[in-house]
Every structure is written in structure tokens, then in C-alpha cells.
Image 1 (cartoon, helix red, strand yellow):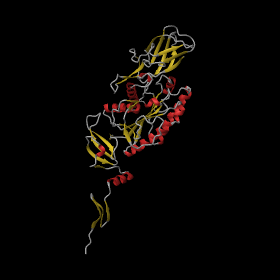
Image 2: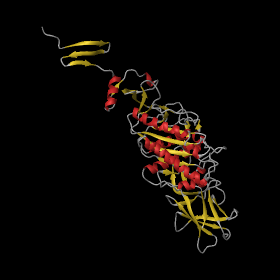
Image 3: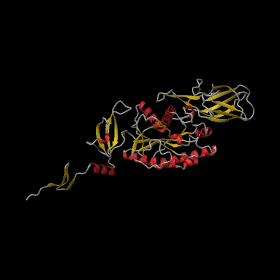
Image 4: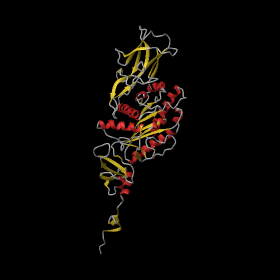
Length: 459
């Protein structure tokens, strides 16, 4: 009697589960099991069409397909007027962009003002996301201990760091470049000294954000990359002496880079600002000289951005700052030099009793903007003080005819003997910039690269 060469042992409503033939058992595995095996073997996730699209909500979606724990689909969502690819967790969650390339991040560490939020949302709302811990882009402010979340959420409000991400995406979109998925998060606390910030809750929480970034990238089967970390701290510390402040800022930068390297990620650009309230001006001048030690960049002087009565950035100020940050970041990432003009050396001109030459570090030729759009005081932001601190009247400032990156300053009277101090933008805005200009992505006037505050001894 001939035996059957195959048969079914276990059958479910959707088909045979376990059968056998001459070679042994035949198993039909679920999609979840197949995805798990593929992930363990490093084979990637296979896409398949899906019938349960409830996770999409009320979205006019095309071509939904399963990709591991995600449903990927096409849709026409703001701000685009054409179809792009998006994804949503199969179990439900926020819709995010299905973007090519690494999962990017823009991070901030600093004082409370760095996490200011505005009554607006991210323009590229599906491309600008935060860790899925319900803290948005502002983080916990040092009052909440974060967890390393692998999930991602869209933002309910705009912040300075989400404005930065929007500016980066806007510049890339305008140049028809790839639009990445960007994690935006600021971690801040109430540290009253920079030494406390170095070891405080903001630093601890930022470490967890980076850990979560790596996990989130893995869930998307992407590498992770931190584009930039902004250090926004200075006015909060009113006790640390200037020399110690500069040294500890260097330690903070080193600690940030060590944290990034610990997670196996490449070195990010470090963006530095600390003069928001008209304080730490001399420290910023010193720190701008450290740009050779790493990718350390001062994107712009704080005096060029609009602020409210409490010295905090207005919405327009945040958008302008974001555009400058984006321009600086893109310049550095393309291997070029970003240098706000910064006065380096001031000395009396030999044979002249009322002229001083100022050497300026600059990436392009200088310009004294006679239109004075920022409202600098007399002297276009320059002040000359004698040994007793009395102001010496300045009659003329112009770009040197022999060197377009130097200035000639003339006084109304003969220069006094003894120690002289030249200050620029230390008590208000200035009018010195270079020839660089950039169209603003949010519709405000053209942006310029204004000079950083400085205080020099005149030799």
C-alpha cells in the first residue's frame, strides 16, 4: 500500500501552519517571526502589503506596506504639495518622514533660556522630531530624569532648536538636497556656574538622549549622526572668573565630544554662544580663538538678534538665529571656514598721533555698514577708553585702503599717552561686518555676518 507523501498536521483559518512531506516538517511562520529572524541575521526587513491600516488614522495614504514594526506609505502632507514617503509605527504613533540617509540630530545644552518655546509648530513637522518621552524639543529642564527612548514623536511647539532644524531643512530643500529626519532636543538645567553645568542633570540627560538616538536609528535600520551640539550658556554664571570660565568651557566641550565618541559616533560641530544678555563678552572673544582645537564655531554675535524686555529671543530673533546657525553649520560641514569678523590686534600707527590700526580675523573683506541697521551708538559700536576709563572721541572709522581686513580708526584729538583700551559691541550692537550675506528662510531681511564683541589693549 502506497503511503501519502505529504499531509497537514495543523491548519488555521488563514492556511496550513504545520505540514509534512518526504523531507520533513513544513512550517509556515508569521510575518512577525520572519521579521525577527531577518533582524537577527542582519538581512534587513522585507516590505509587504498590509490590510490593517488603522495606524494611519484619517490620512489620504497611498501604497501602504509593512516594513518590520513600521507601516510605510505615500502621502501629500504639509508643507509639501506633492507626494512623499512617510512611516508610522504599526501599533500606532506619530507619522514621521521616511527619509534616506542617517537619522540626524541637533542638540543643545545650556541654561533655561535655551529651551524657550513659541506659539508655533515646526514647519517640517514630520521631519523634525523628538524622543518619544513627551518632553518635546525642550527636554525636562533639569527637573526630570530622562530615559533613553527608541521611539520618536513630532513636536507640539516650536523651540530654538526646532527652528534650527527647520532652517537646516529649508536650506537643503531650496537646494534640492536630501531632507533627513532630524531629532531636535535641548537639555537644560538651572546650574548657576559652568562647573555645575558640566556635571549637572542637563549633561546626564543629554547622554541618555544620545543613547536613545542610537536605539531609534537602529529601529529604523539607519546609522545615527549628530550634526551639531549647541552650547548656550554664559549669562547664567555671574560668579566664575573669566579665566576659569573659558577653561571650564573647554572641559565642557571635551566632555560632550567624549560622550559622542562613547556611542561610536563621529565628531559633531560644536556651536557656541554666551553673550545673549550682554554678559560674558570678553569670554566669547577668547573662546572664538579656540576654533582650531576642534569643530568649535561661534555662528553669530547675540546683538544681531531681536530680544524681548527680559533679554530673551523673540520669535523673529529665534528664526534669524536659526538661519545663522544653519549657514555656519553647512559651511563647516562642506569643509570651508566660518569666521565671524573678530578684532584681534589694535596698535597706534607709527608717525600718526591720532590713528589706530585694528587687525581683524575675517573670512571675507570688511564693511562698516553706514546704514547702521542694528542701531549702534556713535562710533559704530567702537569705544576708546584712556587709562582712567574716560572715553576718547572717535571721529572716523574706515576699512584700511591697503588691507580690506583691517580698520583705521581716527580720534578727534591727539591720542593720550598711557594705556588705551578699544572695545567693540561690548555695551550694545555694532556696525562692523564682512561682505557675506544670506537670504533669510523665514522672510525677514537679508542676514549678514556681524563682528563678534571684543576688548583690546592698544599697543
